[in-house]
Image (cartoon, rainbow, N blue to C red; front, top):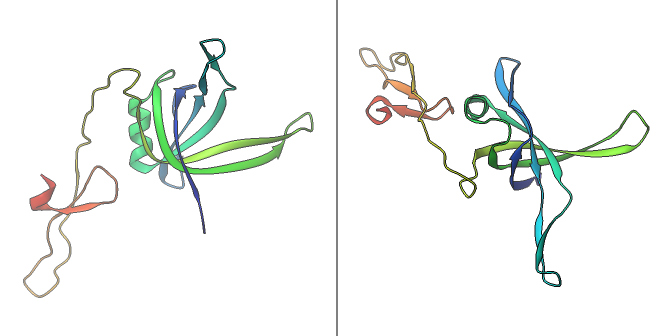
Amino acid sequence: MNETFVTLSGWLGGDVALRDAGGVPVATFRVASTPRRYQRKTGTWEDGDTQWYTVNAWRALGENCDRSLRRGDPVIVHGKLSAHVWTNKVGLEVTSFEVEAAFVGHDLNRGTSAFSRRKLSTVPATEPVDEGQTGPQVATVGGTGREATAEHAA
C-alpha cells in the first residue's frame, strides 16, 4: 500500500494534549503552516492561506512532545499524511488533514532549543536459554522499543 509522507514547517496552534489510547500514550496537537512567497512585481513578501494540520505522535514521541512543545513554538513535523472528508453542522463538506508523526522537533531556523536525552528504562534479564546460562541484560533505548545489550546501553 502506498502512503504519503510529508514534512511540515509551522507553528504550534495550541498546547499538546496527551491522552491514553488503549494503554498507549498519544499526543495530539495542531500545526499551522502559512506559505510565504516573494512577489517580484511589488518587491514584497505575501502570506498565502494558512493550512492547519492535526498531528498525532504515539508512545515515547508523544510523551516527549508533551514535555517539550508549547503553544506558539516553531516546529518541524515529518510523518504519514491522511485526509478526512466530513460534513459540518451547516451541511458543507470539509476536508481535514492529519499527520501521524514519525519525527518532531523545534525549527531551529526560528530560534534555539536545549536537548535533554531521555533516561534509559531497564528491563530484567531474560530467562535462561540453556541450563546455567542467561541471556544478555537488556535496556530499552529512550522508550522507543529499540533494545541494546547492557554493554551498549550505557
